[in-house]
Image (cartoon, rainbow, N blue to C red; front, side, top):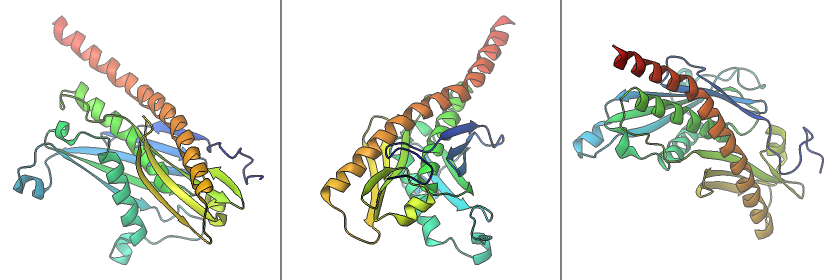
Length: 261
């Protein structure tokens, strides 16, 4: 089957990470999956939710918020949630997914009474905004936590490993990886998969959009998802290392100056 953008069935869209897109956040990236672009920013603050204090739960907390900016789609201006007076069901479901996905790989006990706020704002949507948000949020968390360790605000990085998300679906009779908007629209069935860098599944979301799907098609989509997640994990590691290179140099210079006095 000829894909709309000429990719192979098991090929992701071009994926990139631009670090420190939001300088006042503890860690941030602009993640791009083809024409889907999401700003993922992590702000870590001292303090935990009241329920944790009331129940004497040790450690910290991590939560996420997600929104599509008014100009993110081609179908006209999207009203902000505040204008409607409530968060729409889709955004609420996605931000809970982002939070669950990151909590699966973060050791909350190492957050030491801090709360990590993950904000994912969609600049441009062309399918896969939730998968891009999770993937970018993982890099933003890795950068934010490591910077806090270097600054002496955390004893150890709470992120055990990266987590990534990717979609796969059946369009016509062809299983395809990382669906763009048109492919997602035309898919008979599609899955969103969240996996760790080690290849373990965190969450699966899938359904037949207009028809049923076979066990063989399910197996093909899962295999595509694992293939895509492996590729993404490598890109996440590279992006994290590049973003932290300057921070480590600054920390080393500060130590040298301190002990050279």
